[in-house]
Image 1 (tube, rainbow, N blue to C red):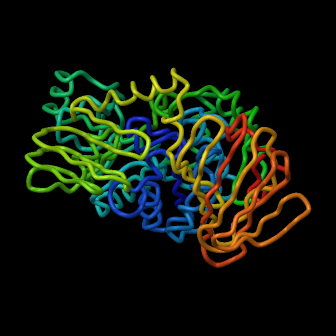
Image 2 (cartoon, one colour):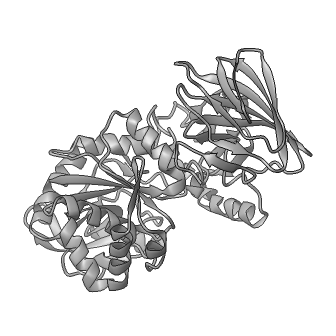
Image 3 (tube, rainbow, N blue to C red):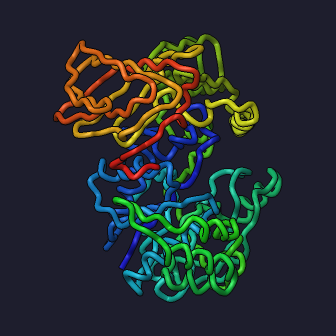
Length: 470
């Protein structure tokens, strides 16, 4: 049977400030209403004979994955949690072990969660061709037919033909300089390396054992000691962390003699930068992509994205990327956006938080928006989803004041349990055991004012939590 495997482990730093570590680009709606992850799920589900998708993601994104999976109405084939990042080869290994245990004949379609594909008919046709090769024992990757001498992608050189639709891989090539990329384009025997694969789960495991035995052993031990937690599968942290960190290309595809490539032209983009998003987006007559409240005068070939809180206006600019969020704004030339990661690196070095979190942070129970902060105080807007409940908790260094803006919240404060209605407030003293719950069918909105000597999120002692958080 055909089993889609979605890899969702990226941090998306090249699309900062919209993409952050706690909400990377695959979970954002960049083109259209659905996120890139949801679009990948939808495409995978439309493949002939596709079983419920398996997702491999980081532990901190697990609730986002579960919620977005439910949002497109798809069954869950398994959400495997990577306790630490170890690149694509170990991530695919735990998915292969998971599937091989359920279906010895499983064929995997491995798809990154953050790619854009415009021609889905061509994509499905390429998958069908690849399945035939995979059933014959080949490990198949997809080579995107290049339309420009792109220096930001690796390339695949095609070798001997394998039937009408595939080729043996002659070699994988690192990202070239411009002159080399131009030579590849003129040659016609090279494709961009897409990072998408089709192979049988057992064949991948056999090749991994042959070429990366330490990785195979670590993945096997991690899966043997795995534990189910709600809708998630937690592989063993110590075993998985012992695995070498390597990509599938380096660990397997460049070493095996069973690597095949199926060329495809399907309107593919990895949305690896703001300029690639601009190129993949609908644009107006002046070549601009505008989102949000934007006014542009004499502006051309630019991407301008406003937050939902203020107007962005431009006059007489050309080839810019302007991305505004409530706590950070990026302004860059379109030909320099590959350097955005340098901003993220500086934020990390300075110990700042803007690369980690948006001002609005999503949690399994809803969300909070940090409205204001200063010495010894912080103000947040909390929204509790219907039926949601926060952990039973206490704080050592802060007290809290809650004001209900809309809805009805059930409050636990030490030995008292009571309802708090619209325009009512309560005080949670420092050290008190407390909890918020929404027992209604409508969202509850509150304003929370924190005061104390320390206001960090790590000053939370959870006593009970329905979401399994420590």
